[in-house]
Every structure is written in structure tokens, then in C-alpha cells.
Length: 71
Image 1 (tube, rainbow, N blue to C red):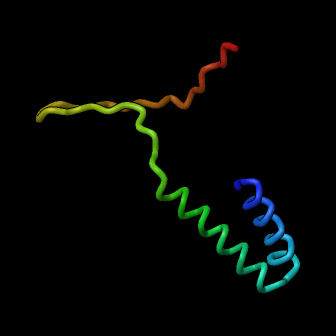
Image 2 (cartoon, one colour):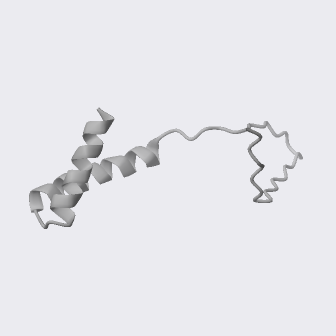
């Protein structure tokens, strides 16, 4: 099903956005909007979870270094 949606989205972009066909433009806008909404409401993975007691603090430090892939 995903391949069919991708093909439909590509065709709608080509014929609607680039080709100036209003029907295909509507299809492309609908599919693009649905994908955006799906990304915004999808669950984000939880990396780590802590329970803090009153008085506890947490320090998050990110150096922006991506470790080398050992494989």
C-alpha cells in the first residue's frame, strides 16, 4: 500500500504542482497534509526516563559528537 501512495503522490506532484492541474494539485495537497499530520501525531521514542524526587536535579549534556560505527 505504501508504494501505491508514493506513486500517487509523485504523480500528483508532477501533474498538479508542476503541470498546473487543479484536481491533481488537490490530491497532492491532501496526501502531503496527511503525511505531515501523521508525523506530528506519531509517538516519539523514549530514550531514557527518570523519576525525580523533590530537590533532585538533572543535567543533560550533548556534545554533538556522533560515535563511529564499529561495523
